[in-house]
Amino acid sequence: MSLAMHSETMIQYFLPSHPKSDPRVRTLCRRSHPFTSFRYLTSDLYSNHKKITFGYLGTFARTILLGPSSAQKAALEKLVILDHAYAPKSHKFGLFRASRFSKELQTLKLPGQDLLENKHKNDLYSYLKEQQGEDQIMLNGEAIQDFSIKNSSNILLINPAPVLLALRSINRENFNQELIERIKDRHDSKNIYNSYKPLEINLTQTGERDKQKRPCKKKTFQYNSIDKVYCPTSMLALRFILKGIPVELSSLHPLQKILGENIHAHSSQEALDIVYNSLLKTTLSIRRLRKFERFIASKST
Image 1 (cartoon, helix red, strand yellow):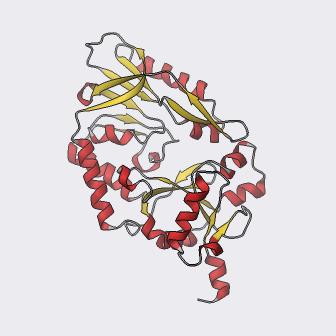
Image 2 (image 1 turned 30 degrees about the vertical axis):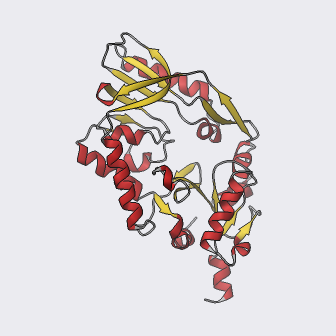
Image 3 (image 1 turned 90 degrees about the vertical axis):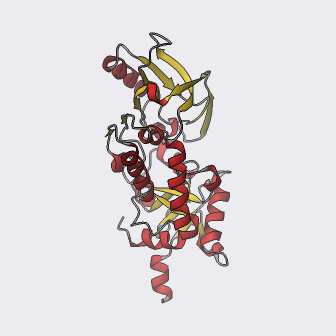
């Protein structure tokens, strides 16, 4: 390959100026280019190359929240963002999900299954089988509507991630309240539980991290007592789909374009196949980063 051609197709690794993300980007770059990684690292958002970075925070969030110029929007469209995939904890820094910014963050649908090794495919399948075999789930949050502790009809709302709402300039309080009211109207005789994390990461108006603690209680639910789950953004949705529980996603959910907005009850094997196939289409291995680079380079922006 000529130097000219190499320059046109080279993928750079963008350092997002965040203390946690930067080391991850450097590690990814070294895994893909162990001897020449310094040539592929950049802090220049406006270079002509397509780029890979890690996480939503840092330069990306600040640029979006401050209102990107047309030049910045064009630059962001060349940026692919890696985040942790839905996988066992042992694979936390080995398997990733990729998103791309256009009008919004969109999970990339990957080509075939070339970006996952057989071992990782088997590990994912076993992980999902293990979760499907569980009888109960523990959540943090509070009851919104609690008619009876003995009432076996429970509706769950898994609160959306504040960061994803902030990146789209959606008011979190309004979004949550409208969703709660809609759920109450639909399920006025059932227990409704609002689940959220004790510590949430939000964004300030300038795109900086804003840690927020929320008081909550732990509650354990038997899966067979849950009638439906509203899960706007959380990947917890997959646990409920695996158990054959109807789930509603929002357009903000990373897998909504693959799974659809409403996932109905399915048999155990059908549910397992649906979830597993959605992960095969969206998960890549750190060991296949060079292949992923070629995939990114071949995509039109």
